[in-house]
Length: 300
Image (tube, rainbow, N blue to C red; front, side, top):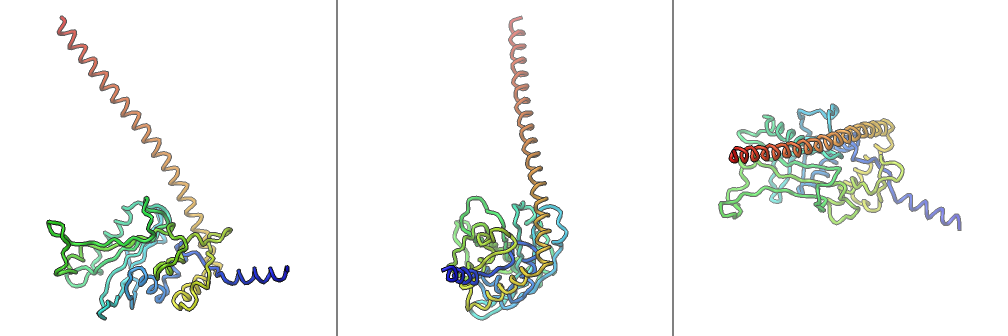
């Protein structure tokens, strides 16, 4: 009986793969350095056939963090449309696992728009901004949001004739927002399959650096097997695990600092509220004195 239970446990363990957690910047960078894996992930997100990707240089260095972590990679992606035509678009992928002010995202986009290398002739290349968030966005329950821009006339009717237009696409962009905490293990489509490697409900109980993935879910899918193989290599790399520890220490410091700032801001807000209330009371007292003075003057 004990031997039988042992083999049941052994088979259960063999069903799961231990892989590095790609929510860590160092693991995510290692993952996306593989061109085929980058195409697989971008194809799933864009719901397009990405036939080629190229990492493009950008102004912000991710290893010189000053405040909150935003890991950013810019891609030039060649996509093949259903009619067989190919076109080049820019994909600005930003990942963070702390709640980050939107100003930082906007700053990155501003640099992106102002970069002459992102121009093709007189127009900018079409841009898609992808945000992989390690936090929830308000009460929005959908794990993945597709935000598309539309063109309307005065009466609110959607304009389709003449679109897409390079001038319009130079000034607007689509966005894809992924709420990683909203991923809960359900796989209903290709995107769910790809994003399942970010599902934090699969974290190991004792080690947040690794995930336990059911390998039977990904069987006979060569693209996913390649992703899992690379994440397995990362999990077995001692230097990679050390850098993940460094990220933990860094974010622990950041969270402590942000908590202290939050407490200070709250105290300042309370003090400002008290000062505002006292000022209102003084104004009211001054008005009462003015009224009393007017009454005395009238009495005299």
